[in-house]
Length: 370
Image 1 (tube, rainbow, N blue to C red):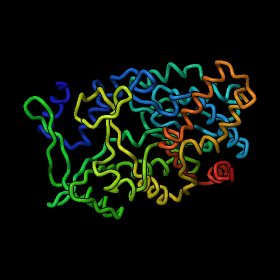
Image 2: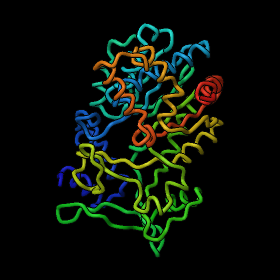
Image 3: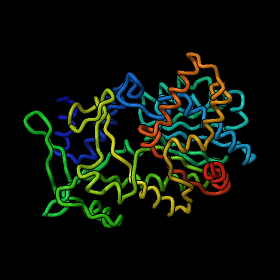
């Protein structure tokens, strides 16, 4: 067991809620997963994300942003939340090329990890448009705002609970005999209220995750943006499905290490990713409070098709008429990975919300019949 986390928990009384354990395991400034892992994603990392799996994701976004700006008659400001090392922004700017200054008024890349912000800064130092790299979410802009949040919410620390005959109990983490173990304590009223507000009754013995902070965070972000569009790319379900005991009796929380899914959540803190599915209804409630409209919730593959990935492939010369050489095969394999109906093309969902003129335009682009 890593001594640093035992020391941290002992300093807090020897017992912490899982929310605090997950915060330490992922975001500790020195030992946390996102601080200590050089490159957690990619083929040589622990998992794949759409923006890092292939440059075609960013290239598709470049075309989508170009269409948005042309129809709006104004440049947009792109906000990338959980920006990592800047891979997504770099691929978008690469896809835009010389058009970048005509499409984007600027970019704000938001990333909690100091190490990743440094890598993003180095990667984007020569960007064609101004790029601000920050740890603080500031979505306010004089230009139409386009907010991209890829796997942000599923990496937020969550509370873990279990329904028992005695009532809802919170699962906590305790130091015991030089290691870590699970314990239970009565759940905070806020956690009980969360399920009541979503109309959810857990079954006896069912384990679930709760992230009340997601709704508040989303609301504050939309309030600050005022209007524009937000596209959330993540793994998630509505509350009725997420907390269905037949499908997720043991919750959705898992670990990722070397592309393998694990259930030992207390193993090797700081060396494995921890992630829980998003409750889309949290983000919907936040949007409704801010008078933002839900434009669509669709699988990643459908979003990419509607956003113009086919056109980008044809423009690059890898369409159906292309010569079947090594470059074409490689490009098509990457595209297939993004669109795979048995992989991320189906599993990852895109929630699109908008307000104002840019929301209307995004709805035209993404909801017209295929």
